[in-house]
Every structure is written in structure tokens, then in C-alpha cells.
Image (cartoon, rainbow, N blue to C red; front, side):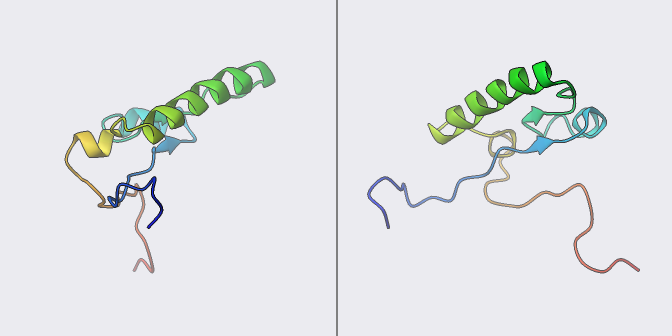
Amino acid sequence: MPSWSSGRSRQADRISTTSGLYERMRGDIDFDAGPAMSHADQLTYGTALFEALVEMASGAESKSEALGFGTEEIVPWRMGAVL
């Protein structure tokens, strides 16, 4: 294991691609990228996303970790075949 690793698995920041998804799952999604439609907005939101990722990499909890989900995966859609 690398010397910088704590040995504990980390959750990833959850990023929504639409504001509607973010609104429906606000308690579990960390960043709303939906508004980044223009070039200027992409620069603004890209900077904010980078800063959020640096905070998490530095030890800040994701919303899922704060809710106690640990390493459990939460997806807004069903995995695999759906009948």
C-alpha cells in the first residue's frame, strides 16, 4: 500500500449532469454541474468542481459519508437487466 494511503476506501464526489437530478437527490449528490452550459459557466463550474475535489482528496467527507453510507454505492438507476 502506498505510504500516502490511509488504507481506507474513499467515496467519490457525486456529480450530477443535470440540475433536475441534483434537486431530486440533493442529500446525496455533492456537486450540480447542470448549470455549466456556456463557456464562461464551464470555467466557473469547472473551477468550483476542482476545488470540491481537492477538498475531498484532503479529507473532507462526501455527502454519502456524512450520511453513514461509507463505501456503499448509490446509483439513481438500476444496474443490470431490468424486466
